[in-house]
Length: 388
Picture (cartoon, one colour):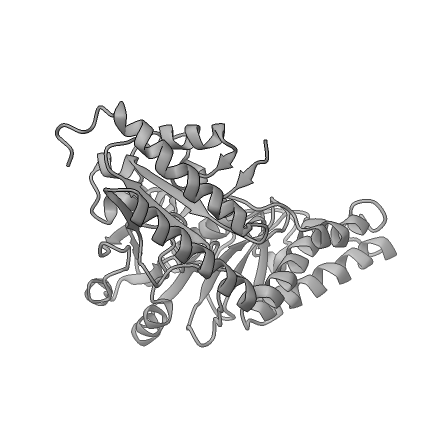
């Protein structure tokens, strides 16, 4: 049976070109980038070249890039690092109710340590309420953290407007760009972003490496202490092979970005139209237009999404109900309940995320199988009575 992978928001395969770029730094030039001898210096040169290339993708300066182990660490470093470095100014942080748990749970941890957090509401599409944000900013506010693209429903937030508002108020602005990095244009200067998180394995690079952009002048305290790597902002021997792979992945993604966005948008529009047309009581979660090209998040009344995922897996289609980080948690998605869905409605969701290797025949496979499986599951559904 041919497998159809449609969970690119969870992770992506490593591109062959990325793998090739990484190989020399796994055996030949494997030296520690902090070493003074030739092999170490070769690793250092490769790492700094990668830093320049990654910085260029978001119009940043190379010295503003801090390498991390991934998006989660980058989010934690942004929130905790800024909070601890700016305690004299204030103790108030603003985020939204639909953020990734790497941000939500970090904020909850900061609340236990004396910080106050405001969690903004969103509309039914997952868009942050800008008026609520404006009213929430006070003299004690030190940081606003709003994701660029929602990892579950694909909605693109008005980042440039938020950045402008934060700049006018003299407040740092962080965005989790894990789902948008190298997929849609990002210009940290034009968007007035102070801190930005990104991850390699979402763009066909290796797992275990990411970055945090920290605008020059932003006060931030390190979370990891030791050898003083990354200009003292993140200690730990750098993952040179991973960093080189991350840069190569970004280079390929940026080159293909416009063409890929157009292709994936066309696939998504066909999928959405066919699913909503062919399945009664089906709905699209997230904004119908202002969403990342490869994301289509549906909900189907009267069924459980987990059962749908298992049935799809049996016919070779691999998708998810939401965030891969929470896929083993049977609680209703906090993103879906935050946009106004009941727990029962949220449990009937299916996230399909397409990517570089998704073909038209894969989408046709989904269009052919999902209506049949939903109809089958509804025959035995315990939810038909008392549905809300």
